[in-house]
Length: 119
Image (cartoon, rainbow, N blue to C red; front, side):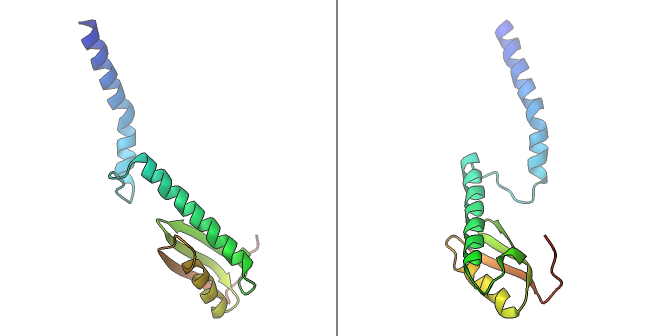
């Protein structure tokens, strides 16, 4: 009898503890319910690795001012923002990003000739 009571209490407690997580998951933009925790972590690590590689390649290039270009990656899609002195510089940054291993596509939102922000 006590075993059934303890088991029921544990199940009820676990359900109450996990309820906020279920609400959070329902509010997220993307349905990742089909992904395991390992897949989610790998996806995050892959995006971080891609971002780092793109930033390194931009820093190597003499035509691109890497300090003025922000790089973000989400599921292999690289988003470039910031400022470039010329259209050629912005295009070169996009070409470098696209040529980086693991990049699925590039969303180039670099502004040309705009005001530069100070960091």
